[in-house]
Image 1 (cartoon, rainbow, N blue to C red):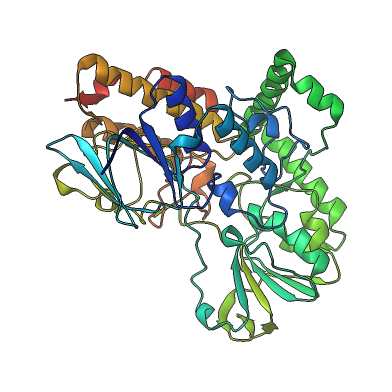
Image 2 (cartoon, rainbow, N blue to C red):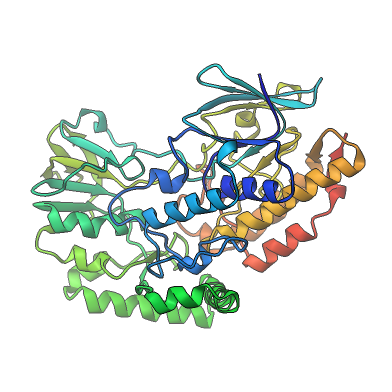
Amino acid sequence: MNECDVLILGAGMSGLCMAAQLKRAGRTGFAVLEQSPGLGGTWWDNRYPGAHVDVPAPLYSFSFAPNPKWTRRFAAAPEIQAYMQDVAAREGLAPHLHFGVRVTRAVFDEGTARWRVETDDGTVWSARHFVCSTGPLSRPRLPAIAGIGSFAGRVLHSARWDAGFDAAGQRIGVIGTGSTASQLIPPLAEGAAQLTVFQRTANWVLPRLDRPYGTLDRTLARLPPYAAAVRAFWYAVLEWGRRGFDDGSVARRGMHRTAEALLRRQVPDAALRAKLRPPYPLGCKRLIYSNDYYRALVRPNVALVTDAIARITPAGVVTADGRAHALDVLVCATGFDVEHSMAHVDIVGRGGRRLADAWRDGPEAHRGLTVPGFPNLFLMLGPNTATGHTSTLLYIEPGVAWVLRALREAEHRGAATVEVRADAARAYNDRLQARLKDSVWSTCRSWYRADSGRNIALWPGFTREYVRALQRCRFEDYAFA
């Protein structure tokens, strides 16, 4: 049996941050288990053509590890993965990383106050603290469409892309028109003989203020005051953009005008424009930032289909109007199963209670970090810590800092376990859901919401509010034993 103080599940951005900060705090008794062959998490999985981050790169680096090497304002997936590799090397994390390891079960042993974690190869780990850093966007979801298993051509999911796939000369159908689809559709359109895009609901699209970073940019980025100023600027810009989710705000009116101007400029055909105008308020679904998505849709070899998909056949897709769309390849840009993101691991807490049962009505946690009945279990990017307007790293870092505070507090008290009180967790989530119920995110269907309609993903406020809430988080809400 392998033993450690802290066991981290997942080597994406949040797992990397947790590991780096443990090492910086002098806590070297930790290990990171990652099921993929390498570092990256979502940036290992999402290798589809055109994959890039949708927030400015200066905000997509840790505050403790700025990156002066970005070549564009909106970094592509390979650059982000290279940055993560660089951080791991600089922080000396290699000895702690274990790749190709799939965790299947984690059980809290009340007698020893330790987590027993089992992997698919039969290895068992024992850890005082168990940190789940898999994040909400880790389990790809195929569309629940009749006949999808019968398709005779090739089926690709955006998060399980085949790097060797060549779109040249192919008849390709893309299901989905969200953020991922907006990135992969333009490069696919360049090579495909015919690209058919199946749209259920149009999305709000704003320009991506992208540009290359030259030698001067990278030189200046090595100067800490300049790098800090650029980061602060983009932080302020995106926080202002969050105001666009509030009805009647100046930001909302400005974003509406910008979105409409982009649509009119890039889509000359009025009928097509009508199909691309969202029928729901701006911000209800995640915004798309793109300069080439609309341009791809007006290409002669691209067709936008808005009729519902009735079924999939061996030859292609049949829509509700009875039309058959012959395809060689079916691309599913259908996102992730956020509601059941932890379902692949059987997590058992105090008294034999399973996390799957605790989350039967949808995931929830106290400040997105802890769940009553599961001592010494910490979630990174847990329920309601996602953001629709800025970098997730701004939420990861304060979460990691709070976990380190909790570990120190437990040691100070001589306690073996730390566990959030059920009444505190209930009160917190009731207040949270009351705020979300009256927000823009309750007005349409999206991956932010569970099947029940409850928002399980988003934090409803501004970034500073979340950070301050964690900094002021009272340990009176927790039981130490």
